[in-house]
Structure formats: structure tokens, C-alpha cells
Image 1 (cartoon, rainbow, N blue to C red):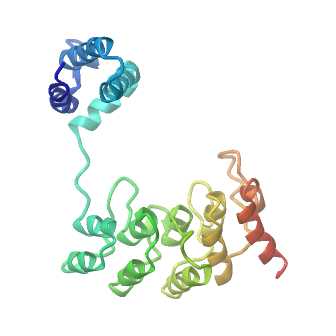
Image 2 (image 1 turned 135 degrees about the vertical axis):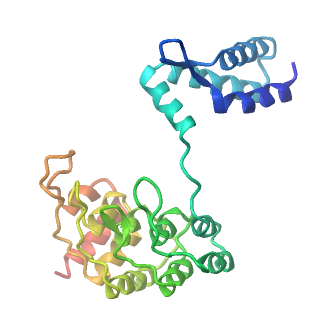
Length: 259
């Protein structure tokens, strides 16, 4: 058994693991099936090999998943039509390195949207870093990032629900929220489909720091999701969303007493 040869074959097979038959229906390529069978045979001879076990499990999982014609068709389309690479500014943001971000800002449109959901660089910075960096988001605001934009139907404040903020003091995050509001972001902006405000989004994700920061700036604690009939939380209050998470409930209780 040559494990490196299996790994080489896997790397070569994956980009073309689905083909179409004479009728145009998608199916797994002969090369993928041969690799799967060879790996399974090798695993039978070397059942204690952990790396081989992982490869076998991955290939078997793919084979099972892609046996569904619809999933196979979607995967084939994705392989044939890969998404465009994200803008250099987005790549720089993911490093968290301020010097790289400054360099990427030169000559670019800081409010350009990217991807299926029209994400902005500021929204990307809020949601994609392992821990939200106030230095990075304030740098983007300094460069002209528009906090009224986020995804297609949301502003950047909705992104706080998906940010990693546990390392931040709520009052420091509230400073960012305040600046966004001062620049025109609507604290009570509602998404089109579910009619959720930024506070509802933060509470629904059980993010107590983001929840408190929004409340500090004046988010409406009485806001309810839109009565749209879409989803089990249609018309729900923030209390309904917080149910099950003591930290988020404690924040809501504290601010409810101040009403």
C-alpha cells in the first residue's frame, strides 16, 4: 500500500469526480469509483491505519451523498462553474492584519458587494474574523465603508449576531454600533423575508455581548419578528428567541427593568 499514491489520486480525481452518462445524467466517474474500491481494499488489509480509515470514510461518504441525482447535479454544476475569487480586500480582512488591509484598500471600492448575498467588506469583517476586531471595523469605516449596507436585505448591524464578540466589552462594541448609527445605519432595520431587526438576530444567535451593545445604543427590546408565517418564530418576541440561553436572557432582563 502506498498512501501517498492514494492521496495523489484523490487530488486528481476530485475536480472531475462527477461525469455525465450518454443520457446526460450525472454520475460518479469511473476514476472515483476505482479509487474508492482500491482504498477500501487497502483498508481491509490495514484496518488499524488511521489515515487510510479517514480517507475511506471520506470517499464512502461522498459516494453515498452523490448517489442522490439532485445532489450530484448540483455538485457537477458547482464544479463546472466555480465562484469567482473573492476580492483582495476580503482576503486581507481574513488575516486580521491591519497593514495588509490598509494596502488592499488602496484603489478599491470599499463598498463593493461580493458573492451570492451581496456581502460588503465591512460585513465580512464583522462576521468572518475568529474574534471581531474593533480596530479593523473602525479602519474600514474610516475608509468610507457604509454601515447601511451588509447583505442584500440587511445592514451591517445584523451581522453582529454572527460575530464572535465574547472577548469584547459590551460598551466597546456599543461604540462601534453608535458610530454605525451616526453614519446612517438603521438600528431597527428589518430584513425582507423574516422581518428581523439586528437585536432579534443577535438574540436568536444567543450572542449576549452583541445583544447588550445594541441595547446600550437604544435597540427596541419590544421588537418582534414579522408575522410572516415563515418559520416557527414568526411574530416571536426577543424573549422567545433567547429562551434556553441564560446569558442572553440575563441581558434582556437587565434592560427590561430599565424600561
